[in-house]
Image 1: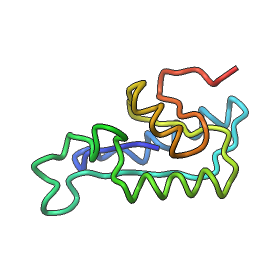
Image 2 (image 1 turned 180 degrees about the vertical axis):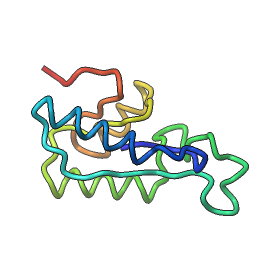
Image 3 (image 1 turned 45 degrees about the horizontal axis):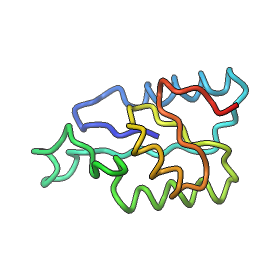
Image 4 (image 1 turned 60 degrees about the horizontal axis):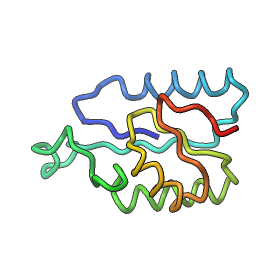
Length: 108
């Protein structure tokens, strides 16, 4: 998963690289969730900010991610972009699985 500004033109490459790294480590990538900011008329002024300081994602995108985790039985949700410990904890409750940031190790 990742939260990207509309100015970030390489978000697809970053998601591809993360999926490749995860697969090389033995993980099975079951889906991708991309939250874009600034692609609509109202979002341009807030392009670099997350949709929610609590969860990084918009409510609809968070529900989409939770549904994907539940439907696929995901063992973890991995963010390509940074998430705080608080965001990770809130999202883990919502998703029903651990949430990993780009610099966190998988749970033992």
